Length: 186
Image (cartoon, rainbow, N blue to C red):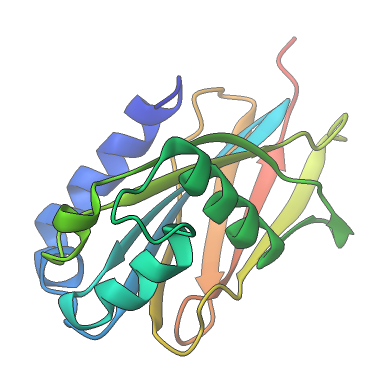
């Protein structure tokens, strides 16, 4: 989807190899929301892959297919991305960052009904000038809490100026903290 996709693909591939049951065998009655966080000196990118299980796919499709014609259009996917955006909070050092939708696409409704279709939504935030030193990025996802399971992982930064030092998550991974160090390159 973007220039960070290769940085995100490697952690995803490693996750799939280590924990294949988490991604491929999510329960039929859960909405898997996997978020990869790419942190660079001038931007933060969230790539969210949403995969509804078979038992809840119709419920999710109704949220997206607003005209109920059985086709998920690009406009409907963009509107759904806006609803997801309202359920996300991203903070850097306790300062809330504004998220901008940079991409959104959805598998066809028929594919979503199989439990393997993915809705991909990408957001970008501009943190402003990072001061050298330690920082904490916090992401909270409140989207469709009653039916969702969450994953939050930091992607390996492409810039050596940013080092991820620690990641922690709450029990269901709807909230994650990423600690990092920023050291400007000379």
